[in-house]
Image: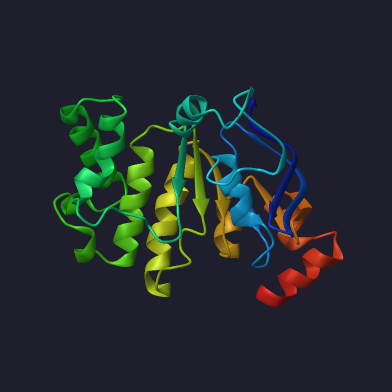
Length: 243
């Protein structure tokens, strides 16, 4: 497999607070990696550094063998290839569902409006809300909003999808439907990095699980290695508390 993301000695400070401590992590093409760990361990910050929503303090991130920099033009090129789904959906309230999905690919001239509309409707069908194309976000449930957010990210035809705790803002009874959408993407071979607290989902969907704590990667391996037979004491403590 080809390495699609290569993170080397990544450091991130917020003021005097050291959030990421020389993190090394590689993601292979078509790999699904779930990042787990307690709140405040640096998981979301790591994800936000990958697509440069946060500027690293030090270290390097290579995307498809190209060093990511702060150059605005280069950043735009990289972000076209990296889809991001957030905890709180971040939909535009004044646009209907289809307009939310088609805005970016049309604005960036990746598709005509007609092409984007057709592709957007196909994506809505894929995520199970094909009849919501003309609805506005305030008329949708949390689960429906997150499905729109996933479709919107996919509309850019990204090489990698990043999910930052995609179900943490959802009511428990609608979590399963959103997770099933992500599982479908995994079965199609989409490269994904997922920050999640859903351990059974992580076990089902991932090729590799990364456990983070206090800004470092403590342990990583297959779901069976990390969840069923952890080697590090800190991993065992964390899993004992949540499983």
